[in-house]
Image 1 (cartoon, rainbow, N blue to C red):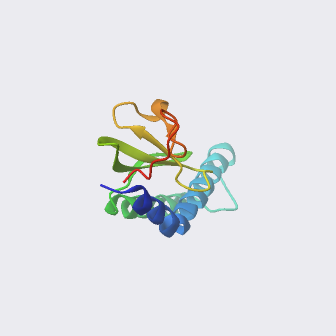
Image 2: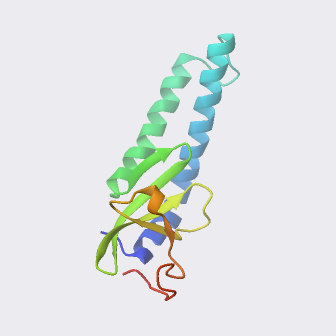
Length: 129
């Protein structure tokens, strides 16, 4: 379980690895598109596809080792199990977010996403643990 502060710290600490994941994802998409369309690519061939896939999976494995739930890679969506007001939640970071500013109840999924500040249910501010 993560407090909001711990989850935010981990997002900041692992940001270079997440940025690498985004670069790998983009390179892999371009390489696959070139190979499918033209049979060749300035990014390489089948060996480079396998190399990019291995590097991408290594980053995902590293995130999982920190108990981060990777819900998507296009866009990157990371959930951090936590608790808010005595209820299990997932602190939620989506690619493009400047910081971890969202959460949702575990059973509600992404559709139940709410901003951390202010508490959108009662108008009060809560540190979330």
